Figure 1: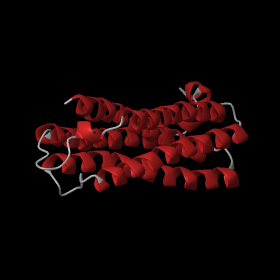
Figure 2: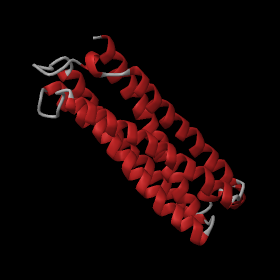
Figure 3: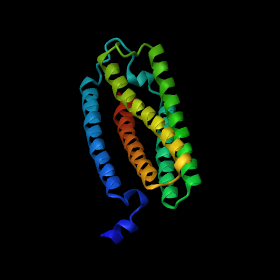
Length: 200
């Protein structure tokens, strides 16, 4: 058993770290319930646009594809950061985490532009049940991305000061789980909100 712990990745080598990671998986399960509720609400209110513009009139495939590319690429770079961490490369870990953050910020920039554009076109939060559900769903995801970026910045500061340790490696691994989770949620948003909304 002790040999297996020594051979495990650094983030799994203490019981505290193992329990922390397990606890975060449970937290992600709760997040699945949250987003499932938001998706269900969106599905029920789909098409109830009242006098507001239809989603097919406002959704732009180019912008949505750019946002998707940025976020999915950030998931890939986050994976490289974990690879660098497990090889003990502090510089590589920090570099790829920064790249991940830049891609995440790019995604947020396009999302903010998108929301402002829709608002100017008359699709505001109170304009209809559909747009309310859209902003709550997409906005909740965007808020999670924002929190993830802030969390990662604080973690980068800790990595610069302390390097790769049992504690920092656990934190990096946990935030990578969080980031990959947000990418999975985005795939569902991209498919069920944007792609369907463009053709209805």
